[in-house]
Amino acid sequence: MEVVIFKNADKVTRRGAGLVAEMLGVKPNAVFGFATGSTPIELYRQLVDRHRKGELSFRDTTSFNLDEYMGIAADNPQSYRSYMNREFFDHVDIDKNNTYLPACENSENPQLVGPEYEASIRRAGGIDLQILGIGHNGHIGFNEPSSSLSSRTRVKTLTRRTLEDNSRMFSNGEFQPKLAITMGIGTIMEARRILLLATGKSKADAVAAMVEGPLTAMCPASILQMHERVTVLIDEDAAAGLKYREYYDLAHRENRALKERFGEFYASG
Ligand code: PGA
Image (tube, protein in one colour):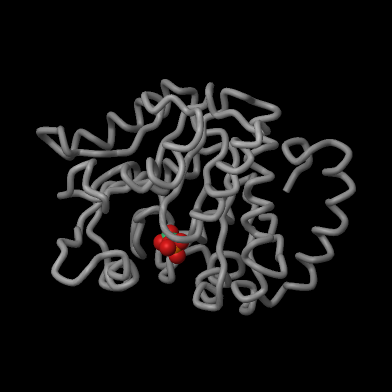
């Protein structure tokens, strides 16, 4: 696991956008795994900005989002489809026909949505770069603590903690879904490269559990310790609970020269 610590959240998202740009440089038809939540919003803004300047094109890319709520329509402003359109897709040249979310709005049987989603990912050739956030409880996607570490895309019930965390997005009296469809942990682990972003003090415990804690379903993100190519981009606040901080900084400095020479997607993390 490569852990890179930046002075502030802005530098975290800048580096994240830089990695997406590098991926597009080596593979213009890359398949991306996208995330929602507050952390990646600034990442999408920077990508939109770079697209507007003519630096980046998403024309040939395909994307699969991690998750989608159940019980609200795609055109509901609270859906993750609406979020992705609003924050990203509407502002870049990606073909929306090539943007996928695991929505079950039009499905007779939500249990079939997961296997169909997985089949679409396989048909696209698998995910080249998966972007992740991390929940306060260590979840990735909506894989809540106790999720099977081999799980596939399926319906999940959200924990009280996640419902509380996400309630800030819903106004008083507005329907807040308690169910969602999420890529499984096994699905996420098949991405060829994973980029996890976390910022702020409130994420420090989850980040420490993910990076240095035991591998356990009680911190689903800890499975990333088993992935070959994970980069964790965090700010000082989110790094506050790490015991090996000094080593991560040293490794980052040593790796930098290699990456400058061979590119991010050559050097090993
Ligand atoms: P956040 O969510 O970016 O809104 O903190 C992260 C997550 O729950 O994965």
